[in-house]
Amino acid sequence: MSLLFATERQVAITAVRRACGLTSTVFKKLIRNETLTKGDKSPVTVGDFSAQAVVNTILARAFPDDRIVGEEDAKDLRGDSLEATALRNRIVDLAVENLAGELDLGEMEEWGLGPKHTHTPEQLLDAIDRGTYSGGSTGRMWALDPIDGTKGFLRGEQYAVCLALIVDAKVQLGVIGCPNLSQDASKPDGPKGCMFVAVREQGAEQMSLSGANPAPVKIPTFSNGELNMLESVEAAHSSHSFNDRVSQLLNITRSPTRMDSQAKYCALSRGDGGIYLRLPATSGYIEKIWDHAPGSLLVEEAGGVVTDVHGLPLNFGLGRELGENHGVVAAGENVHGKVLAAVNQALGDGKPKV
Ligand SMILES: Nc1ncnc2c1ncn2[C@@H]1O[C@H](COP(=O)(O)O)[C@@H](OP(=O)(O)O)[C@H]1O
Ligand SMILES: [Mg+2]
Ligand SMILES: [Mg+2]
Ligand SMILES: [Mg+2]
View (cartoon, rainbow, N blue to C red):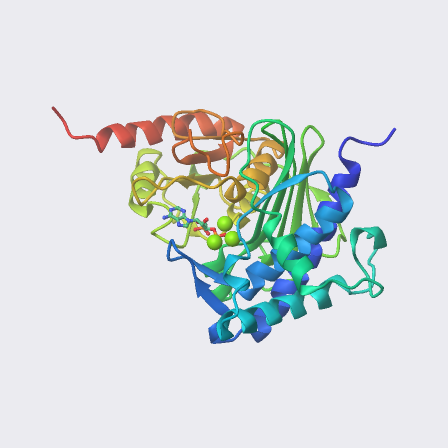
């Protein structure tokens, strides 16, 4: 009997692996005018667009009826301006070359892959725009962040290609590719590039980006002195000062580990850091589902708990955003309760006294 979501798992691994190959290539050749600034002032590069084109092309071929909630859209690539034309040509070239790469183990030609396939610019822009689904609480949908941690990507630090399958608002499958993450955190100069795969009720594992050496990951039981905090590099994305207050309340003396992207969830799942805490630094910011869907399942399947500051599960069924949740608290099962208590004490301490 085959396991549930076995085909989806293989398709997602293929898509993430291909996209990671593409982003690594882009990083080596990225030039200044290949980055745009979006309406919310955040950066997006040719890597983000072309990775979304590749992943969505594969998903559309393998699962033509599935919806996709992807971070990017092709609006800025469709115009006739010189800038749009140059960006479009570059993105199309990158995606075409990546999709045409020889089939690797477990990959299928019918997913649009291999040298026999051609992909027109229009098809690739449409593939990017397959990601414009508004989300919702019923049916199947994929959540895609083609480059999570774009700022880390631009700095040459951590970033991740993140893909999740959500069915009736529940994340069932998550795949995260981290091209710059050390395969073994205790050997920072050792081989880099890992993929994390989780399927609900089937566990979580880490492997190399090529799929070699798969091994289960599990959050260890930390004693108090061993705990430390994982947090964003960008102070604008999560409040560092709030995390410091929580660390003090928990008597954590080790300094926080700062890294971009859902690599934080990956690090947590294998025990490199005991807590991932993310409180909005900007009032009114609502977290996006693609920034948390695969990471939260990975941590749960590695024996952890992921909630918001009220202890509520993350609700992936409310559209493109986690509209009901405030902040994210992720930690091992034996630690999560006391972190949540400390978070709420710190939130209470911050309120004006009447
Ligand atoms: N003001 C803000 N507050 C919280 N998160 C924000 C934010 N502005 C952008 N982000 C999100 O933070 C993500 C990166 O998180 P981190 O800091 O953990 O690396 C970004 O993902 P992208 O890089 O995919 O756009 C983006 O979705
Ligand atoms: Mg972005
Ligand atoms: Mg992101
Ligand atoms: Mg992104």
